[in-house]
Image (cartoon, rainbow, N blue to C red; front, top):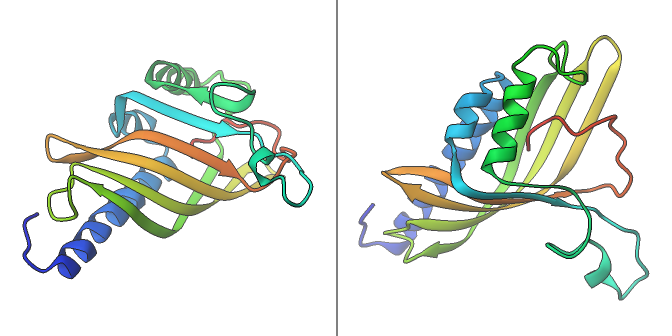
Amino acid sequence: MLHTDPGIARLLLKDEIEQFLYHEAEILDNRRFEDWLDLLEEDIRYWMPISRNVKFGESEREYTREGLDISWFDEGKDTLTRRVKQILTGVHWAEEPLSRICHTVSNIQVTEAIPSVSEATQVNVKCRFLIYRNRVQTETDFLVGKREDVLRKVDGQWKIARRKVILDQNVLLAKNLTVFF
């Protein structure tokens, strides 16, 4: 993606990243979990800290610390692959029958491009998400929050190397976290 105008290069990169994230949402909504695994780097870190209610001025304590405190999940490619395989057995207690899911991704911001916007091989991305989940007849969940991703270009394709998921609730209102963010 070589462009002399940095503004055009920035817009083209942002569009490319947006299309990648929309494609990922479509794959997950269509339960193509094995295709989703193909979007993940082998060394992925897929992490969701737990939110805490803290006093004003103590925002550094609002989320559990990576590698030091407990989290909702902290997974790599192997664990994510096992989760997918378990769901695809058809005997997963929390996903039989499979949930109906709708991912909405918005407020996508490319915060850093390495080595440059016009030749990016790695980008840092922030976005917001809304995930609607319906199970069986009456179970409905809304999961809302923010994501911080590191995407790497591998053989001309973007892959997720790191995903930090910030859920905007400190008490999990859903019965489980089988949905992929």
